[in-house]
Structure formats: C-alpha cells, structure tokens
Image (cartoon, rainbow, N blue to C red; front, side, top):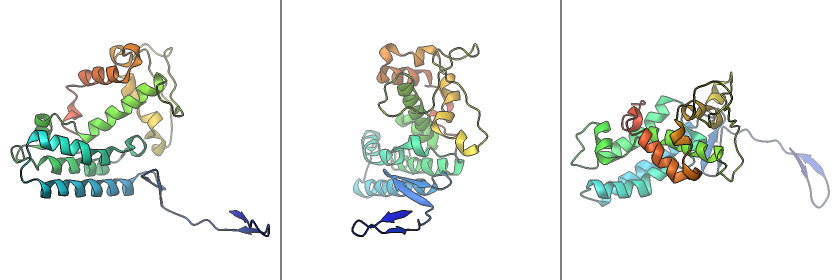
Length: 228
C-alpha cells in the first residue's frame, strides 16, 4: 500500500500484514468464511451470562428464566446471524448446546430431554430461529421494506408452475462457500412457502411473522434441531 507523507510529499510503500480474522461491526470474519472464531466468541460470552444467572438466582421458574434468557443471553447468540450463519453441524451444535445447558437451569424440567424442555417452554431451537430470521429478512427485501442495499434476490414468477407468487429465481453456483450466502441459501425455503404466507396483508412484517409461525407450528426442527 502506498503512503504519502503530508509534509514532504514523499511516497513510501507500507506492506499490509496478513490476518486470518478481522472484526467488523461485532462480527469476526475469518478468511475461509466459516466463522468458527465468531461462534467460539459468542458461545463463550453467552455461557458466561448464563453462569451469572445460575449464580444469582437460587431458583428459576419457567417465566423468570424466559425473561432473563431472552433479554440478556439469546441476543448474544443471534446478533447479525444473517451474516455468519453456521454451515457446519459442529458449529450449529456448539450454539445449540448453550441453549441446551441454559434450559437445564430450571429444576422442574431439567431431567426432560432437550426437545421436551423447549416445547414445555415454547422456546424454539436456535436452528429454527435462524431459518425464521432468514425468511423475515427475505420478506423485507422482496417487499422493499429494507432500507439497506438489496442482495441478489430476483423474483421469478414466470418460471415453472410451482411455488408462490413471490418465488425467487434459483442461481446455480459451483462454489460451496457461495451456496451458503444469504441470497443463495434462502431461495429453496422461501419458494416452499404458500401464497398465504408470502403475501401477508399490506406487506407488514408482523403479519408475515404470525402467518409463518402458524404455517411452521409443526415443523420438526422447531423444538428438535437436526444438529443434535
């Protein structure tokens, strides 16, 4: 990189150091885009918060736990998740294990299997919430509700006969990393949604969320994530 001295006008060359990980707006981006360091960081922070909850409260009922967990622990695990979605089951499980340990703080249900604890608490798995978050962002982009620059999402109403009225055009990519980008990974799931969901009245986000939750109420990964 060239550097110009403001006083003398001398131009010098400054070598750029190579870095495997760089932080950008709170997300640790590594050079292979697997985001392992970021997952390590957020799980460590969330586990620390859960440890504080455990040491502070001698007894947790379901209501108090939900308030504490949703307010101060889960947001750490979900911040900017659209960017760093884990593509490997080991990282997905690492994230899910945080919530698995947290739900065991409730003595009344601690002996139940993880899926049953989630269902009893009406607390979706983190895997399910990431997919739900992708669909909410896709809805905002498709209906022009996002004020940010739109990713490469092309509606394809004229191709094929299946799918909804706002179906997306599937792009073909030969790069495994590219397949996990937001604009690529959301297409199949979005196209599987019915018109009654994607065409929410007045294109309001809350209406979409409600209809999506009703449509997915029996989705297997809601309380039983695949990355066990």
